[in-house]
Image 1 (spheres, rainbow, N blue to C red):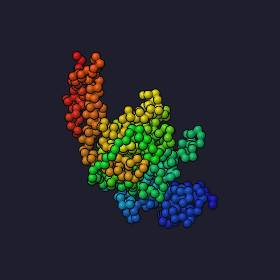
Image 2: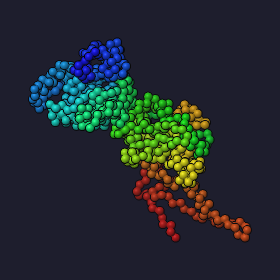
Image 3: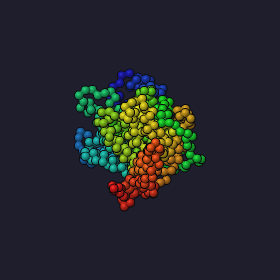
Image 4: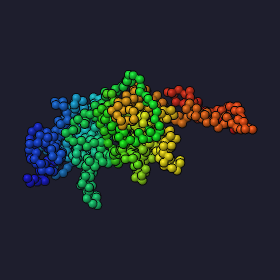
Length: 629
């Protein structure tokens, strides 16, 4: 069926009738795949093609109708209408333009604000409508967005923004441009309240909205195929020397480049929003965990260093996603560093641990055949993505759990030019200073700086078959012995097992595995880890922020101090090398020389009797005495 350009644009961006009834322009066939839409219930209810899943544009109130529980939406600020602040003149006056658009769309302005429930969760919704002057941001739109933020703050409920917009409202001049600043400050005030803010980008989302309040949300979602970006596609094409890629400036392109958390089908949007809000609303994030009854499980025996290496690399060993699916219910993943890319080796999201919301950052291992380099190798975008999740945990005041399983950071020129060193340093600094409880779990391989960056936590757990080392045994053997075949010997020398880490006070708890390794019974391994995690989170969850930070500072400030472990080690070395002199005189064994008096000098400012919860004061710091004869 032939259609004119005007009809096509009306379907894509124009006003539509109620979803439950007939549309203003009867659409019998899909514009993309030519599938019949006449008898499609999905199309009638959601305006989505059942064959190619093309999402047709719908009005703001219709979008809210799809999301809100029946009869719960109450519109606010409906009577606010635009004026003509500049007395703008043209072929048609601005007042006449506004009046005609109001009559054609049934809206007073391009923004609809109201309060509703989504799967029983109270929320404030602001939806922009492209059919009203292209969804451009004028004084009224900016004011409605700001008032929606203030209403959400007052009611202590989440805010959801559904955006379909263009650029500035030219008839209002620089006053239109100032609405970007107004909405940005309003969103900042909402963030300070610790309330969730979720934005949904529909087709199209460009201009002032995209570059202000829309992109300031905690979580960014988009509909499939939506046109998204600051500049209109026409401008980009004019500035380009060659045709743009087919998928450029789309939701899928934004997701690939780390600027979106998810692309969500319109049919699934309601459930996704509800899942996020359930885990981020204050009532859910304030839940306190109680320690499980019964004694904490401990390993029944010990395993050798090389056996631990083999277990950690077993191709069927459970990965971070395996544990996430078994330990954390209702996990909702977020994507991207909001800058350049989405590192798939880092998995971030929010989930439930025994009914309490926790933020999860996990290193996802991709099993490789024996003999191939073991991954993953984390790039700078992965570390920045982890920092995003850390900052979200701080905003909502929820514990952070990190799952560590990485062979190290990516050592490529691309990673170096992308700021790898800075990303690692700032990740460590951010995690060390988080004012929320943190628990790290070494699942398989805590490799090098990527393992360390996510393990600066209040409690560190380590699975029995995991390893924690600055370098792989093969690399250590190559450097130390110039012989790769001595990897097993190097593993023993590195002291990389969980029991070694416990003895050196690098970790706090060894989590036992089923006999033979976690891969023999992933369900049992996940259950044991879950109980250990609950114990660890409960142990630090009730500690005040000041004390939490003081403990964490001392914990890592004192790493490498002369603890009881090191004292025993050094005493043994001294007794062997200096205190006993065994010689042979006249073919007879000489008597032992008297044991020399040995004094172990501690590091400055570090002592065994320092209180756990108090930092070392400058007055208590001492300097080593001069022992020169």
